[in-house]
Length: 152
Image (cartoon, rainbow, N blue to C red; front, top):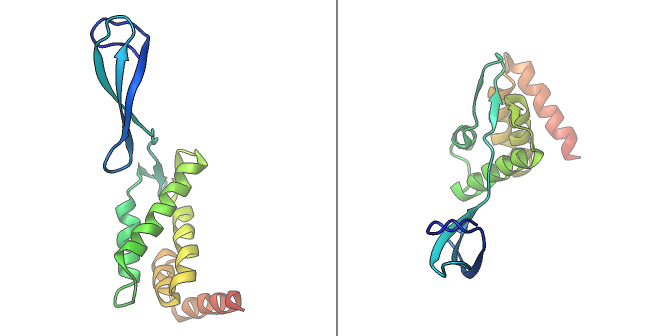
């Protein structure tokens, strides 16, 4: 790490502490050449995720869109906001872990549906009806049959 005072490249870590949020580490360093101390912060680099929409347009990933869609699906259902936040974080981390910078809305929708299926079947059907653009009652019935078949 380059010393901000003398420009020397050699320094030693004197103290390390995790930030309150836990997303960075604060390090106190001492320059080996001038013996002055300075602070650095270490954070995990997260590359931006681009979402490819059905019409081919691109936009930045917004976790709030996933969260809001699930809130609507769970309207008047028993689920905590913490559970929905946890699902949203799982999906975001899963996307980050693929190391792909572009992800389709179809892929995100499938990830949400996979998690909702195990939590609340009514919320799953509500989400699926919007995500899969159900046009009539037969679409609902078909999705319910698939859900019921997978339960066995």
